[in-house]
Length: 215
Figure 1 (tube, rainbow, N blue to C red):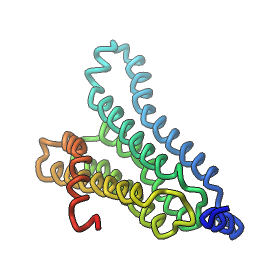
Figure 2 (figure 1 turned 180 degrees about the vertical axis):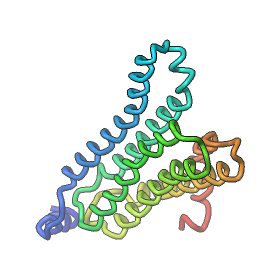
Figure 3 (figure 1 turned 90 degrees about the vertical axis):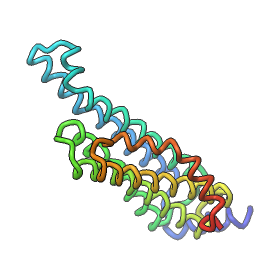
Figure 4 (figure 1 turned 135 degrees about the horizontal axis):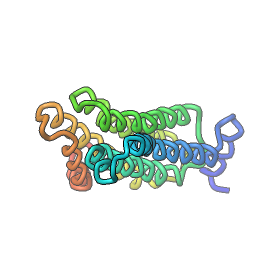
């Protein structure tokens, strides 16, 4: 048995949590959050049927809500993929790591609420801050998770280079979400279109990789 395997076995005997159960719980929470995104649209369909509106009339009234649903669905999916890829090599979960993961899940389950706000409330700086700000919080939780795992190699088998690269991508996402938020605050016409800056995540990560921050 390798030294790392021995350390992980000892970790389990010290009352740490099963990584597999934690991963399954995270998957369930994310699945529920993604499902909750559709509920406001389901309610609006029922209301439209009660008013005898046509499908085209419903689409015309709720197009912005539909766009925010699709956008949030793929954003949560992206966050889950990043988290799933990281935890695939996590073999033990300490109390601290568990609570960091709980905070990450909190930011995920908030996204359906902020999405409902964007579709049903008047768009404004507060709504945009709550929506985009929740994504910044998710990125910060991922960065904290990676930093913690990097300091506790006994919990995982993630390669150092993979951990470093993942950290740069998460940092890049957080920076670009912050840029999108600033754009939404100072240029109201931009709104949520500022989120398209996320297309430059890989580019920014490559830039950061060549900077002192990556060393």
